[in-house]
Length: 97
Image (tube, rainbow, N blue to C red; front, side, top):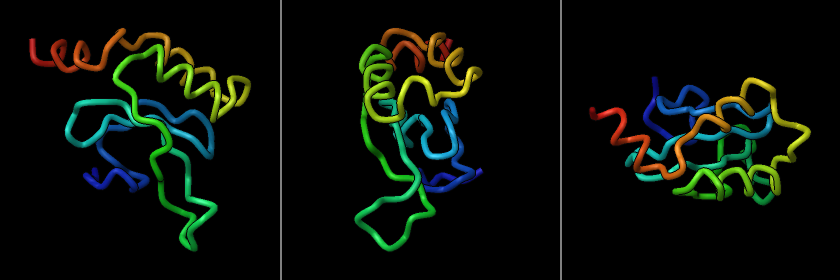
């Protein structure tokens, strides 16, 4: 597993929404990041780039619908998103106990 957030095999992938979008936990474990593959403004288009940074599941779901498109999200990824805690910090606290 990789610790570079831009890598395909990043260690803290929460869900792969589709071929162009995914959600990860940031390497500092303080928030979720909605990422898209590549960047239209850069030559390199094969790595992952952050689009939205969220500490609440409500904001993450809103950003996912807005940017990745609700209909384009894989069914198993939708279930993962629905099971996330209300706030990111609750996720970390749960792991520690």
